[in-house]
Length: 473
Image (tube, rainbow, N blue to C red; front, side):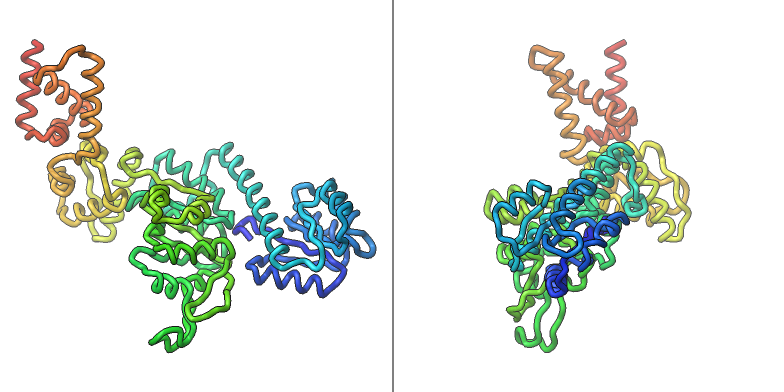
């Protein structure tokens, strides 16, 4: 039921028609891994093999009664939720079973929705326990167990390593995952990695929700019946059907209109949807992953995104940091993209000046990793021989480092530094000297980069530095 950690439900009842109807109901509800037994003597030997995670148990059976089994299960297998299902509608019996360790008590004939709800709650408990166990193991080992799944995301950042480990833990959950981050940070790559680690047999099916009105959203996602609208000459299954047994990834979820949000909420809560032109609900067992570069919490405050949908999506959250917050990745990404660009363009991988790392580290990269890749590919395409030119990067990035990056950091350091060291309003000369010193620190002593930060030419900066030395001497 949850990828690598497949949760198996065992139904135990001496009546064959009960076994058949219960199994059919659960399978229709999207719960696939089910075993049945009509002989209670076989339950404990089966559990010794360790393949059962939830038990639906009748109380009154020949050979070994369900009450006897419940006692044995609570003693020897307390981690397995046991749902008692019996015709005995007695309060004392129900209380006795719950005290003995039953997870739930259902009275026959059991309402379909009641049985499905109880089993799904037990599955959530199993999934939560498994995630806690996995998270504990990851915290102790502090390593990614499936590095191949994350190989498309080149990183040396401890922040990203922690995200990869968290993704491995939640990959085995059936709950939705919301992936947040700026444009170009790799949200779809994270979604694909979660899908890969989950081990589900179905496909990974991506859908970009941006620009889809409700009609397009419904038709694309859920499909339509023949004759549903003019031009619908043939029935068509939607992308949710393609994702059966796999993962549906909805990108730009913050752009969905309210009607589409309601339909998505139903899909998440009930695992049901309606094809366009049909009044018969269809069941989906696809795992739902969503992504956004927008502030959904802010959208809920303005009424543009449903609160109930937001909280339903937030069971598991992945926040990918922008590239400017993990500058330790600059060099490894540079090496990776240079090699990739050289191979694609059939060129020798070029070398680069060490100052390039400093320059790129000071740049804000509003388009994040995607922008960096495009920048390096374009630079390699222009490159002919020798060492990569810094001028080429400066031309593509701009003559100055963007305001939101190094300049804002520099301005903040100037204000804080002068406030601490001076008890008066500083002179223009003092401010200039402080700015020059801080720019040189940010640029690791590289005058060309420091000049770019300050908006000077290199010659002007050189003169100011010489002037400063003369004043000191």
